[in-house]
Length: 259
Image (cartoon, rainbow, N blue to C red; front, side, top):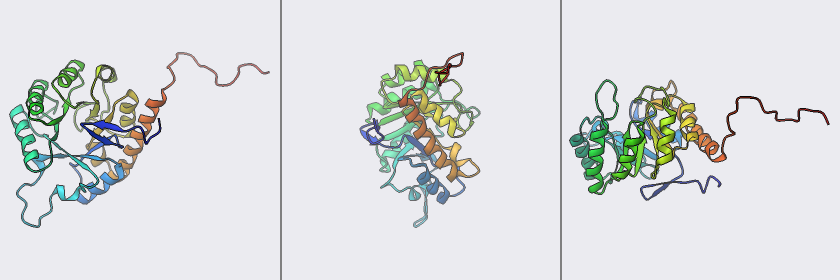
């Protein structure tokens, strides 16, 4: 399979890039736009609660710096701590003309920013029933991942580690189980600190990776965006190629005896 054939099918749309990039925490909107371009991403997440909906006439907002001819905007419900708020924010995004795609995020508490799985599941059921394409952010629990899929989520997005922690994927075994039993695309979301974290997620078989702080919080966000772009491509190609098995002892790559 060549790269032109290896496309991501998600919610009736097709993407070449498997990297999803957020828009928060950049020093300036201009820096954000440059980093998005460097990343090669095609899907950009926007936290609706952080968008200035009361901008004065002529005043530019975050949305003005996203070229919608190049990027698909994925509204998200970041900052919501119950299903009612998350559902309200998702509906707001649709009313603003951003479509019916939503990254559903319902957090459990402000210290850990870990997902509230029960509220997330309840909100998923409501939004799916209302015709939304739901990409559901959740913890790395295989049971909850399956329940979200059964509730109609278009994609399940288990965390690698807590939001903004930069710890990478802490529980590879759980991610592998989620991938093994999944019938929808699995996109690893949260906790990415550097390019190798992205590669590991893709080598495990994830369909994509969503990140924000790993780029925006880097000393050089644009250069890190370039690194993430290469990392996701390398990890995907390595997964498709199939790694050699791990062995306890050495296996010579050349004959052990002379001819």
